[in-house]
Image (tube, helix red, strand yellow):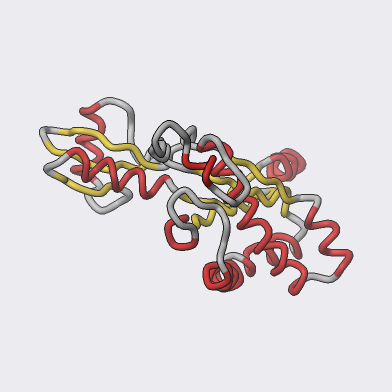
Length: 208
């Protein structure tokens, strides 16, 4: 019993919620306008807040991680200058920075919800658990691949790395985190890229 209790204490589980950046941010942008922020506020309040409160009240919340992600593409330069040299907003120079700034925007909206939903002592404790990170395109959720002459967008958590296993997985689970087939590679690529453009609110909990 002691060993089981110790293992439970050491175990960690993650409850991620994906936020589609295309819904709330413009292309290459990280600033939220009033309408987008209101929509994001509502989404977090109704889709994520109850999970945060339960983990916090049950004293199993370890970390609340806000993670920004992008696809591999960068904006095209304008003449001999990069687009950000024309921007009046805070500048970013690569996808790592863009993903981090978007994560910051989501974290700022979450902070408003926390202030409304938790007491001041609880806010202080909870804010110490929040971390913000930008990964750019380094942690894709989806990849695109050619399998048996057709093209698919595949969730990286659901597949293996060689084509035969891709194909077997597709036959076994045709509707589970796998999209396709597509005749054109660009269709699978664009869908995979779309799925990779996201900010994740990841609730890290103690226990299984």
